[in-house]
Image 1 (tube, one colour):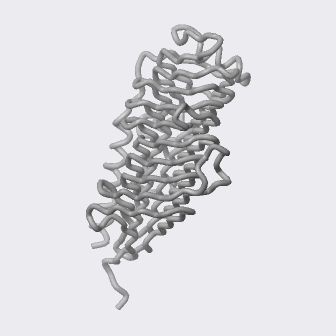
Image 2: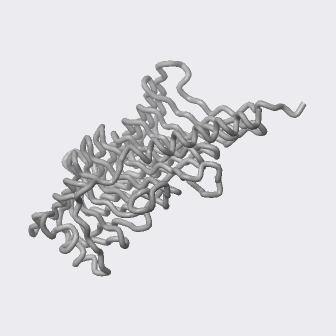
Image 3: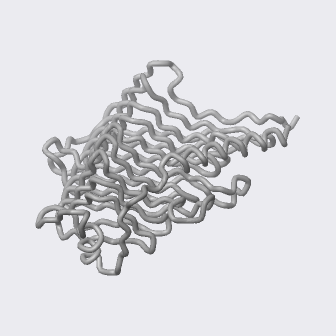
Length: 357
């Protein structure tokens, strides 16, 4: 039985690993750039140099596929807006850091990647890198746009917006966009490779956050990833969040809002294999200290799980079973639960295949 379960674990991990490794292969014919230590100069020589651009006094445009394979890149935009229209990628050992930017927007063909399977020997997976975008205005990803830091372990995505649009939203992740930090290793039997899922941090210091993106920080081989969302106003979760673990514990999801929180799709922090425990989900609404004078005092939580679920289940192995996870919902206003199926919240402990007598 033990050998059978171990074989199933290996097969499942291989499938998960190959799934994310083969979905997005590096793009050919990209322009190769080299970054220096001067963040202002990097903006001119990496992002704005032909065939990318054009860059103006108000906007920096990434209009050509770009690759950097030697080091991390920092970009000071000098207050200008950033338009990401094409793919910019580098190895997972580096970082793409944008600061002092105005509004940041991705088109449907815009993508940033710092993956651990880029520019390494075939079959080798390095760690995922860091992609950090800090805006004095708003951040928008439309349908088709993506940010990817998958690796062994996966890396980190940080989006921070200090402004808000006319409707009060600081970060808009439209349906069909993707934030991805999947953990995966080519060494399937070695859990000490720490192939954990990645982390995503979304912060809107004066506005709301609309999350219609698929956020995937799961792993098939180790511990699930982490999602931290903090908004001065409302938070809306309108697409699936997967921070589940593989042969270890589920991940962590923390959502805080100055006003209300609405969750209408599945959040998965389960452990799916190996006897791991479920993860932790915390939702807090009405935290007026996060808000601004124009914000709404207090705030409630709406869990509309007609087409979703909150999953924090443990898993079994051939010798042990994990504990169920933690789900905590706090609000200074009402908490409304809409359950279309009657089984929309799970935090079950595992049941081992072998009892102790």
